[in-house]
Amino acid sequence: MILTMMLPSSGDIAKLSIARQMGIANAITKADSDISGLDAPYNFCALKTVKERFDSAGIKLYGLEGDQFDMAPIKLGLDNRDEWIDKYCQMIRNMGRLGINLLCLNWMASIGWFRTSAEVLERGGALSTAFDVSDAESKFADSEFQMSEETVRENLFYFLDAVLPVAEESGVKMGLHPDDPPVNPLFGVGRVLSSPEDFERVFERFDSENLGVTFCQATFKLTGADLKKISADWIKRRKMFFLHIRDVEGDKYRFRETFIDADEGFVPDMLRHYAACGFEGPVRSDHAPAMYGETQKDFKGGTSIGYQMLGHIFSNGYIKGCCQALKIPLV
Image 1 (cartoon, rainbow, N blue to C red):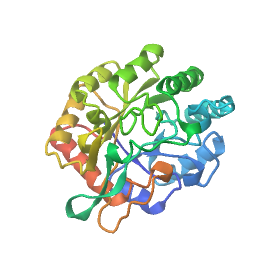
Image 2 (image 1 turned 30 degrees about the vertical axis):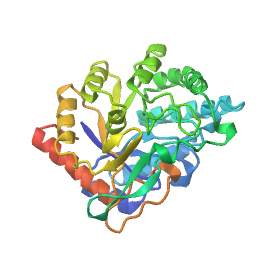
Image 3 (image 1 turned 60 degrees about the vertical axis):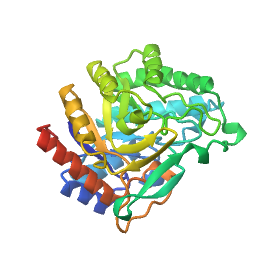
Image 4 (image 1 turned 135 degrees about the horizontal axis):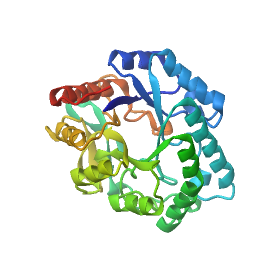
C-alpha cells in the first residue's frame, strides 16, 4: 500500500516537515485558492507551483481531494455549468501533464460533509465530531439549494459524461467519495452516493477503468453494508482507487468519530483484509480527533476539522504499526 497524508497546498513548512519526519513520502492535497493562495488548479502554473512546494519538501503530490473550486454551478445544474465543467476538464488535463494521477471527489450538492457537533469529548479530553439527525432533520437549505435525488443524480451523470473522457485521455483515476453522513436527503437536498447500491448505479451507467471508489471505511460502515464483501468485490474489479482509514461508533443517524484504535482489532483486521484481497493503492488517515492544545475551527475548506496534526501523528503511527505487524508493505 502507498501511505499518503492530507497536507495543505499552502506549502506549510512545519506540517510538511512533520510529515517527512513521520516517513510520509506521498501527499494528498486540496489546491483551491483559499488554501494555496494561488489561482485554482485549472490554471496550469498554479497547480505546478503547488506540486513544486511538495517536491521541495521531498514529498510526491500523489492526488487531489475535494472541491478544488466552487462546484455549486455544476452540482446544482446552473445555467453556467458548462463553463465550469470546461475548467474542471482543464484541471484534469493539468493533473495528467504533471503526473498527479488520483482525484478524489464527492457529489454532495449544497451541503458537504457535515456534523452537528465538533466538540465531542473523546478520551483524555480530545475533541471529535458527531452527527445526530434529530439536530438536523427540521433544518433545510435555502430553497434555491434544495434538490431532489433524481436531479442531483442527473447532474452527476451530465458531469461525468463530460469529464470522464478527459480523465481517460489524461490518465487520471477519479475515486468517488460516499456521502458523509450517508443520510438521504439531508437538509432537503438529495444524496446519491449514500450506499454501495448507489455506486453500482453509477458504474452501470459508466463502464470506465478511470471511475471508481474512494473507500471511506467509516462512512460505508455507517451504511450497514458488509465492509469486507463490498471492498473485496471492488478490489477484484479494480474499482477501489483510494482508502480512507477512520472509525465511528453508532449508526448513520447518530454517531461520533473515534480514535482509530477505540474498537480494538477493527482497523488491523480491515487492513489485513484489504491486503489479502490485493489492494496496493493509496491509503490515508482520515478525520482524527484534535489532541492537547489543538482546536477544531470550522468546516471551511474541509481541512480544518479533523485535520490537526497531533491526531494524525497518532493515526499514522497506528497504521504503520499495524502494517508492520501484519507484514503489509508500505511505501
